[in-house]
Image 1 (cartoon, rainbow, N blue to C red):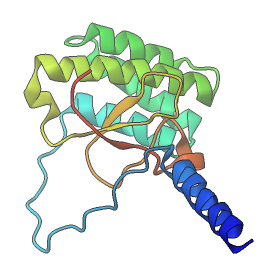
Image 2 (cartoon, helix red, strand yellow):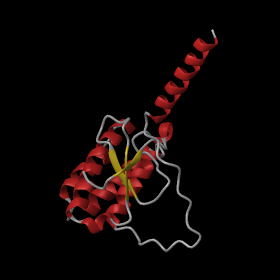
Image 3 (cartoon, helix red, strand yellow):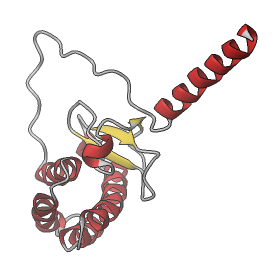
Image 4 (cartoon, rainbow, N blue to C red):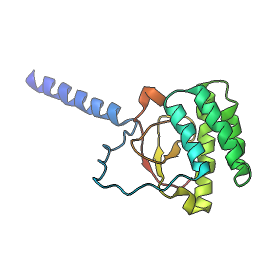
Length: 164
């Protein structure tokens, strides 16, 4: 009987580990160095994108729409595909539609970063395996704040490459 209980306990531990790692929860935040160098200001395009990402992470649809509209304007001249995708986020009927559109905004931004690597300086890419949309996003700082899951699973994700 003790052997059976040991097996049951082991199975529960394995199950718990599997459930916990299903979202690919990111590594523990790295503590900031005592004397951190001042960060380079974000390019307006990346700033507008990051504002959109943060609004979605906070489950704020109106703020997400406003940030997406700003991104449309900022990206229009140099990144028409990104601007087009941001327009869909700006016009989203609900948070789910905004998040779906954000996936395509992220894909377009990562494509732009691949073409112009300087655009991605200082950015960190993450991936959310739980979303049904494009899974990657970038952000300018830690901690990881998942725009696809919002407050429901804010820290779900893992570090990824800056490639589309």
